[in-house]
Length: 454
Image 1 (cartoon, rainbow, N blue to C red):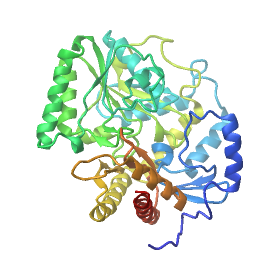
Image 2: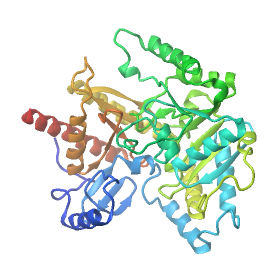
Image 3: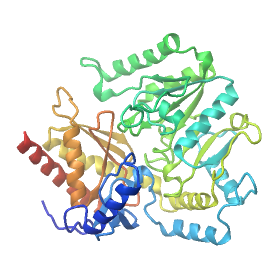
């Protein structure tokens, strides 16, 4: 392998001396419950590159877990934030209103699927958007039940943690959980029962969902079903078209609202503005956040006007909800996406990554499946392709080796054996190629190290 690097430059073992000093302060002052992917501290970031306090530069395949689709410190985002700071920082929309809030809601309404009347509310985080979507759904339907899916991730607050599927590290010993939340099965075609075709398996999961309303909860009690079109933390598992259509139609049959959680899948990540557009499904409500404002905290719920309007004055909102800085950044992001054709780039970038991963799969038996939608791509590692036994040890070793070589990448999946790719969509082809070179080197080093240990 060619070890010459144009972009990634790690000069010594991680962490470097300045990062070590900061780590000591971090360990003394910050709870260990907040985990960190790499033992370094950022000093500067631009586009798809991050430089730490010791001068090491990393190619970013994480993008703050899908938050930086238009890249770190985009000039137009910085300009918008600076301009807003000079005017006012936060009068509080529920005290004195401001135009950027209105303008952003208008933009989101125009971008959201469907030609029906819509409204929006701005909030702070993805979890808060999900919580408010649930509140709105319950208010409108006068029902209490909420259905999410196995391997789903919707947040870390009490309600969204309840809706999230993965027990460790998100739920263990944090109960009791919120009532009236139910988990339905979600297809994982790679791990379908042996001897069944993909079509048979999907049909069986649809049947289980229909039975769910007989064995688990009456449909008349359910306010909403919430689904990630592509499961994020669950392992980048796209919903099969027949499944999502069946769930949607069952919702319509029983007067249950369909909520699309687009927090990680939105703003170009899958090659369209929102992943649900791939399925030709128009959700009743949709939650958005992450790459909406290029790193400035803000989120939203967008939905049918008659549903969104169900709550009365004062029943929704929050002190910092829809902050002017977040609105300014989000409006800049929306302009950037159109001007720089970010959706098209998301589709092309995904194909670029998949093509290279397919080449690696021909060489390495540990690659069980490559999957995703647009640039929301993942690779699942196994100990044996026949048994599909998850290989978490190899996944973790690859991440460490990649970090040490100047590539930031993280895992996902119920078994922790999936590498997910969330690089900024403004990354250059040259940077992608170098990052994938590093990944292959990390793979070889990890396999070699684990073989020696065995």
